[in-house]
Image 1 (cartoon, each protein chain N blue to C red):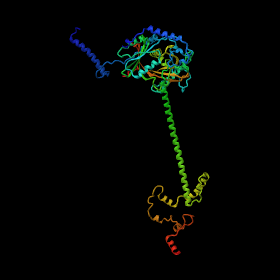
Image 2: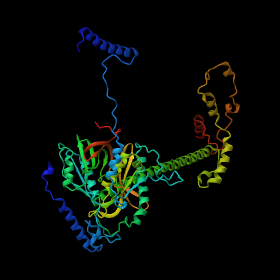
Image 3: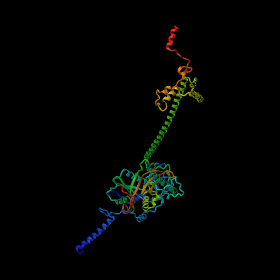
Image 4: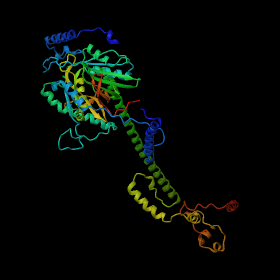
Amino acid sequence: MDTPPLSGSDSDSDDSLVSDRELQDAFSRGLLKPGLNVVLEGPKKAVNDVNGLKQCLAEFKRDLEWVERLDVTLGPVPEISEPQPTPQSKDQKKAVNPEDDFQREMSFYRQAQAAVLAVLPRLHQLRVPTKRPTDYFAEMAKSDQQMQKIRQKLQTKQAAMEKSEKAKQLRALRKYGKKVQTEVLQKRQQEKAHMMNAIKKYQKGFSDKLDFLEGDQKPVSQGKKAAVKGQQMNKGPSAKRRYKNQKFGFGGKKKGSKWNTRESYDDVSGFRAKVAHGKVSKRPGKKGSNKRPGKRTREKMKSKSR
Amino acid sequence: MAAAKRKRRGVPATAAKKLKRILKDAGQPAKSPAVAGDVEEEEKDRIPGPVCKGKWKNKERILIFSSRGISFRTRHLMQDLRMLMPHSKADTKMDRKDKLFVINEVCEMKNCNKCIYFEAKKKQDLYMWLSNSPHGPSAKFLVQNIHTLAELKMTGNCLKGSRPLLSFDPAFDELPHYTLLKELLIQIFSTPRYHPKSQPFVDHVFTFTILDNRIWFRNFQIIEEDAALVEIGPRFVLNLIKIFQGSFGGPTLYENPHYQSPN
């Protein structure tokens, strides 16, 4: 490196200039951003040595009889809701959503079922027993105590369910009972009101029959009573009631209904001569005429009779 | 390390003992069911049945143990696995400070050729190693959603030591790492035939399903021949992290891109 310092520096500066220029170009093109640019590593690649795996498998594999290993590779049994024409269990793989617990567990269950159904005939052929004789006692994976606990838990669960069912039914029954009770009460109220009406009518003299006292002849007498009632009720509300209804009824107090105007003064439609002269008896046939004379008349009579 | 303190029984001695035991059992005639009314009945040749006595050839032994600092749930899971797999052996807890390849020596001393090792970190995350001990592949998983046998919602029951039926998802045949895992799982979880501690009946089924890039494990009891099933438990979910070529070490054969560390 016997180049003169100038040229050396030149070459250096040339190099740096070149690199500087390159940098400037890159920056002007927008490839570089201001700030410290650091070289990043690329994304990590996962090792997948397929050949290595296959070789390893070949070395590692043991050629055992199937009866030693008892392994099955099958997909799950198809669901009953989907009728499939071909029983090829390997091809039916709907994507099971791993988040859906029930679906997931059902797929495991069905896979196990498929395996069992495929293997049992083979085992029977190879005379490997699958059923335990009833008198064969042996230690189980879970102790008897554990199984008792499980049984108890299941029982309490079932009892709780039954209890809640019973409570629901009782509640429903009570509601129904309440309904029936209110109906009965209402009916009684109605009957009472009816009876009182009938009594009042008899008192007022509209009906001289005491049929309402015989309460048990319902359908026929009710029809009769209704007819009689209707005839008498044709008079509708009394005159006083009608006057008041007109004055104060629907719509509240009529405006200016109390004015003492010429029109109202001149209006003689409410005049009944016989009533005014006292010649109409309002209570026809009430125990005969029970007219007690007035005080003065009685005194006169008294003095006269002496 | 605990392994160094342990007394060693040579391999030929244990093998000879086992052989003697089998021969002795073969000599006994089949006893009547009345005598078999004992609760702890483990010898398979006392059942009156069409099964002919056979020799135990498939010598698989699984070492199941854990590190220190595991929670009660993990401990129960480990005990459940030991109960369900009669071809398993237990060992004391291992210090986490020791390197993992020490486990290979432990396996050799116990004469086991497979290992299930539970590792608990920070009392929260549980990692499970499945490995084939001398040279074979090993896999590390993150275990989630553990439910043990003691949970009351799982009402099934099975014989202790009965042979399981293994059911795999068809997805296990699609990808090479899953095929390797399938082989590993088959060799670990299937109880060898005529194992002295096993019961000859097949009355429960283990299901391994691949869903959401995880392996879901369930254990069902077979009640009826028409495949009515009840869950026994335990249940857990394995999230694959890595597969190594060697046992607890060696080059990585596969790394799960969907795995996210829980921290």
